[in-house]
Image 1: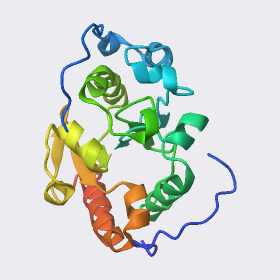
Image 2: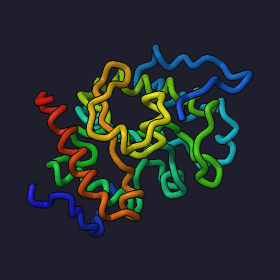
Image 3: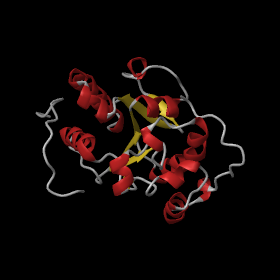
Amino acid sequence: MGLGPVWRLRQKKTPSPAAGAADEGSNESPAPAMDWPALKATVRDCTLCAIRKGCTQTVFGVGDEQADWLLVGEAPGAEEDRLGEPFVGQAGRLLDNMLAALGLKRGENVYIANVLKCRPPGNRNPEPGEVANCSPYLKRQIALIRPKLVLAMGRFAAQTLLGSDATIGSLRGAVHAYQGVPLVVTYHPAYLLRNLPDKAKAWADLLLAKEVVEGKR
């Protein structure tokens, strides 16, 4: 693990608050009974939230559909909305380097998704009704993947998945659970780009997550 928490950015050669009630009038999602093709088609065509009209496309998720590691962020940003893939751009490259430091690789035993599948206008925080509408999709992804670990990246993802308003500082360092799957909280890569000293803390989080996946915790 010589890379440690440094995670130097390098150019890739090839692209590779708790949920509230749903908006009034929303339909109950049929996601719990869906297989992968049906779930992907439903998310692609979803119009439960008004934000769908303002985004280019939904961002379903990407990676190994039988992965041990499931990484969950907040919502697509502008680049994710344009490319249709979560965690791209500079933060995505940092994430790839974080995975490489653990001997992991995007798409190989790793699946990456967001709480929301559509980009909120102006990259604002998702609203409770939007989270309620999208949550069945994420739950079904977890049920289909059956990961050994969920890694919640960033304050919003952690608070939403755990139904808590606690700070990341108080949630880090412990093994939680979501839908019966062990969950570890860490910082979002975009945050780490702005707060370099916290990379050491994120590295500790990743080592904890690795122990959980390997059955050592």
